[in-house]
Length: 241
Ligand code: NAP
Image (cartoon, rainbow, N blue to C red; front, top):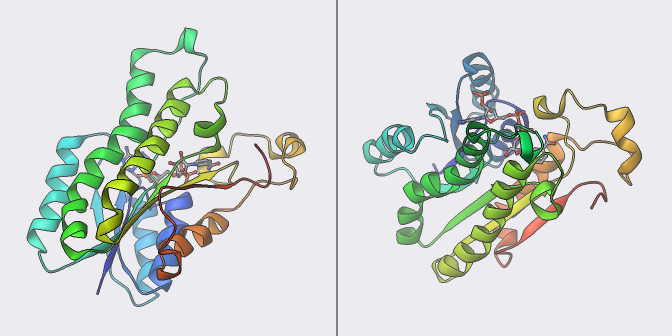
């Protein structure tokens, strides 16, 4: 049975993607950082599909933890294939740049951007050897157009959009696709303090999106049907640009 690794899949968009991929028949490597109760609840929901859900607790901002926890899992399970990687875990910490601290810059860059490099490095070699893989990065509208107060977050997401284009070209001959999904406003814990009633006025579809809608797009990109799509950043934002 093949595995899909979804970083930050205890809650929100990552959880919805993990559930869709489990429904497609994948076992799930369920990464989270701290919220064990939500991770256990997601694990049970995945097991209800008759799939395995292996909890991998590591901080994607910490390359040592990535190597220890994820690296050791791959070493101890040499016959298991991670066919799909979804780099989803992310945080935001918004403030105008003139007030942004070193810590706010570094945390957001480490969690959203550096994690792409260190997590992908662990799984890429085997995808190349097996000549098949799907890498999906969850970025943001903020990385495409830039949003005031998010110089850290926009820089991180724009960085991944660039990396997506390059890695896609490097591994295309190996049967691996690399794409990004750029959501607009999606109803999750990350946006719960935002006022949807006020913000929906600027969204042509007049509402926030749902994690399930993002997950439907991710599961299409993860499927064989999307085998000629690579290096792309696909927006899902209700028409907001
Ligand atoms: P969320 O509801 O806040 O969930 C975040 C998930 O990421 C949780 O599972 C959390 O784990 C995990 N996580 C956070 N920091 C982590 C770390 N250092 N190491 C490992 N896991 C970590 O967020 P979301 O809205 O689903 O966002 C998911 C992705 O979509 C992010 O990359 C975000 O930037 C992007 N996005 C979201 C929106 C939106 O409107 N919601 C829009 C555009 C892009 P714990 O449960 O352990 O905390």
